[in-house]
Image (cartoon, rainbow, N blue to C red; front, side, top):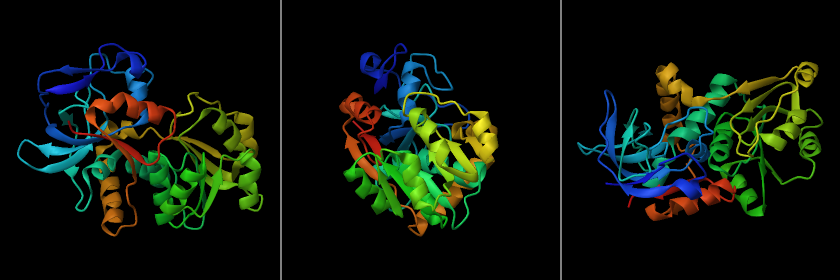
Length: 315
């Protein structure tokens, strides 16, 4: 079968290659699927160049989440198991969930990780309450878009931060109450929208310079959720500032729950599926790419020029 392979760790544009490989064999409790669509995540880039928290020795196929069809004909979604990731004709899934009724392949492929991360962050690592202010960074991206929808569903006032006018329109369509477009002074802009108080909860998948700024926009006894580092740098959290404002800096490493607390993942998925059933959430697909165009898709994702989920289609 055809698969995108990482023969050695390095920049994806240099090391990714298409290869003919044997069909993957699932282990105990795992499921092989024929890939219909696979969603791209920023973590895929980190896996390829060896910067992700969990390193995978090459050779391997990246691709963290898949919508596909099992050998016995069931349509399912789920997280892939390395080294048999989703950017291939067939992949191996750690667990499977029914492909939600009414979702396209592209929507289904991107349904699991982004919403699981958001639910874990907003309802497990903290408790987002109705009426609180949620500030979402990179709000038009895949992870951010899910957070906007989950925040709105929870009854929060959502302030979205985006990079341009087109992304602002996307954020508004997702349900954001206020949208900040690449503000020169993020802290002042947030304070003006909150009567000087700041945001109760900050959802930060960017890190780096953005984290350095946004920590000053957290409200007294607020919560700053560290989702990832799409900005390219791990930021530092000055403990003197944390102490003075009595806010929490909360790490959200959702992937670890798949092994440590799979029962929680199952419970979260039921909650998320219930939101879909009543259409309180609606997975946003910003772009679909042909199988051969994976490097181009990752390039757009890395440059943060994408909105919603970016999806690779079956060859």
